[in-house]
Length: 179
Image 1 (cartoon, helix red, strand yellow):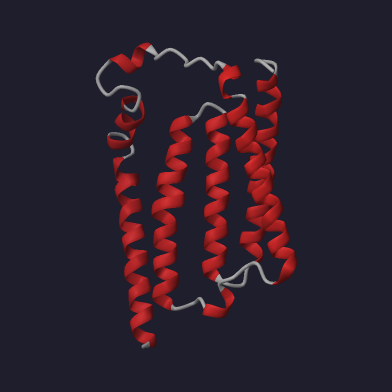
Image 2 (cartoon, one colour):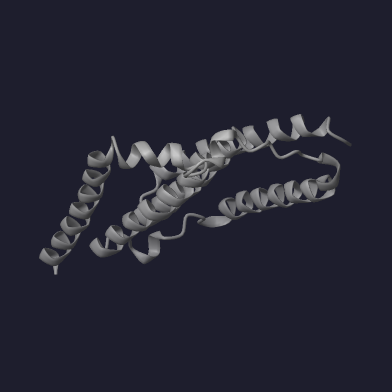
């Protein structure tokens, strides 16, 4: 098994992460508990990040994890916990034996994928693409993305941060009126 295995493995992983993203998005919108729904949304964000990375959009994939699965989900969970919307009995999504069986199958599939990767790790011989010429200048690879963000779109960037701050303050005010 040499390099002919790579396109098949790539296609399998692409469809696997696509199906996992769809399934976790459906699980997100069908949960009654807001905490469980937020956790399913995190799974969706990680699957989308994996898809972006497989499409050679590494920056977008990393930002997907850092911004959405990291920062935004922390704010969501903070507001949910502050408003006390989740009840302890509703936190578990896997009630009964069918949920545990499905989780076991997903776990076995992931273990099989890890074993396939480790077995063929030395046969793939993947090459690292050369660094573009623009990366050698000031700012590196991030410079062309950061320059417009902090020049032309600075007002929108700052307004977004103020909007998030207002949402957190509003959640605190709503929680105080309840108590």
